[in-house]
Amino acid sequence: MSSSFLLFIGWIFRVTHCVINWILVLLGRIGYSNCVMPSCFMLRLRYLSTRMRTMDILNRYKLSVSKRNLLLIAGIAWTVAGLILTGRGLTYLFQHGDFLGWWLAGGLLFGILFYILLFADISHRHIIRIRGLSVPYPCAFSFFGFRSYLMMALMISVGIILNRFDVINKIWLYNFYVTMGVPLLISASQFFYSWAANKEIA
Image (cartoon, rainbow, N blue to C red; front, side, top):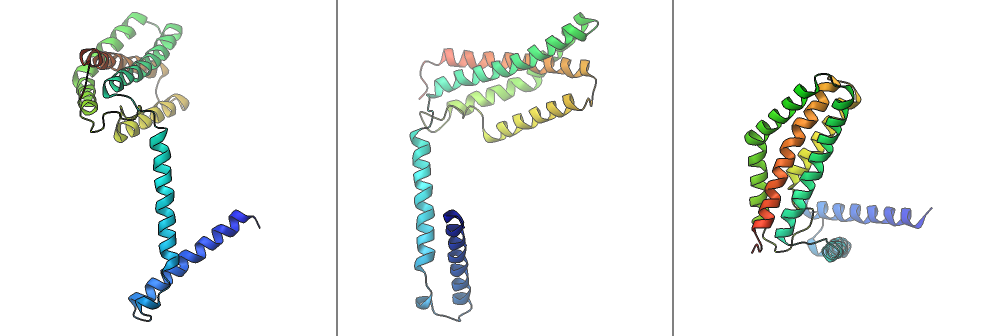
């Protein structure tokens, strides 16, 4: 048996021992003073120590930036996403699309409409959130909140599924890429403007 497996078995035994002792104390079968608590205490202490060391390492090597530069990073990230979607959509439409002018006009028009109705508010809320961060030098990846990262992962997954299994016509799908890329690029300009206009964010 490997040493790591033996350590794991020993850890399971100690946790089980602690649980049994606690149950016996609660049932009144043994007194609190008779409960063998050092193992429980040591497990808890070891867990806290490991967690503190992990957090210390993460804080030490965390890529921290100023809140102003976080706006710049957010703008770059939104630009990259917009260029990827727009580029893939335009490439497919140029190669396979009939009535190209109509497709491009529709994608641009609905993209601007998407920005006005949805993305303008989303980008504004992200800018306000970044400006209001409590730490002066947040993590470089905190330009999105957890829900935004989750939503982004969901949208990417849906796009992959639609593209992989031909759920909808490819012309419509890639035109939708253009439609989504346009508001992303416009929103990115808002981050760049906010970054340029704020030389210092307290």
